[in-house]
Image 1 (tube, one colour):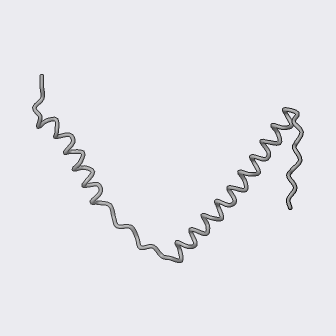
Image 2 (image 1 turned 60 degrees about the horizontal axis):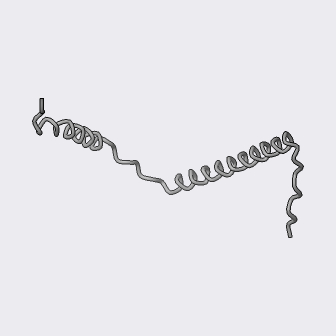
Image 3 (image 1 turned 135 degrees about the vertical axis):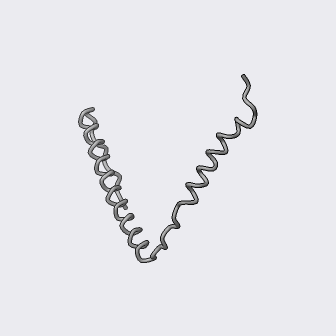
Length: 81
C-alpha cells in the first residue's frame, strides 16, 4: 500500500515545529561581566597549567617504569647551553 505524499511530509513538519518551539522558549543569555569573565579565564588557565604538570609527571613515571621493566638504561639528557 502506497501512502499519499502528504503523509510522508507530516512527520518532518512536526519535528521542525517542535524544534522551533523549543528554540523560541530559550531565555536570552545573561550579560557578561568583564571582571568575572577575566577571573574565570585566569582560573581556567591555572587549572590547565596544573593539569599539564600532572600529566607530565605521570608520563615521566610511566616512561621510567617502562625503562626499568625492559632493562633500558636512561640516555644522558642533552646538555643545555
